[in-house]
Image 1 (cartoon, rainbow, N blue to C red):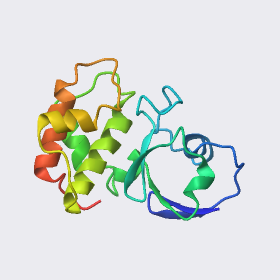
Image 2 (cartoon, rainbow, N blue to C red):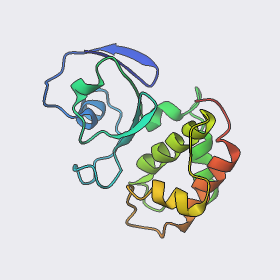
Image 3 (cartoon, helix red, strand yellow):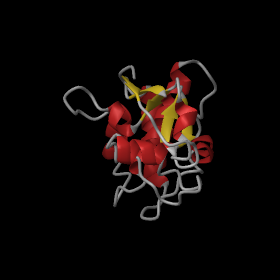
Length: 161
């Protein structure tokens, strides 16, 4: 199969029952995509596939054939600088242990991209909370995460992604 991961086109042979999360982590070494529940309910494995957020633990890798996948590693700048969504979350002290961070970053990035594209995007805190309800954090209250998401959306998350 051929797919693009973080802007790099790849042609690979892969077992048909392998999940996208396992392929990203084990075959490509992109380990920031975390596996929490492995049932699609915690959001730690969230990636962007063709512009839409997806749970990579419930999607087979072969389903990404011909598609464009972005992981949290793909958001960093060329010299490793943080993406504006990551900066907004850092500035609001949104996380403690960091396990859920990649999933939240990708979910918020997806919301920002929707907004940039002129599609309906959450604006109010209640709408942001609803949009992020599929991502679980076991360490913090969600207020600082919502604060960071709100800041990222208000700023349009800076650079083009």
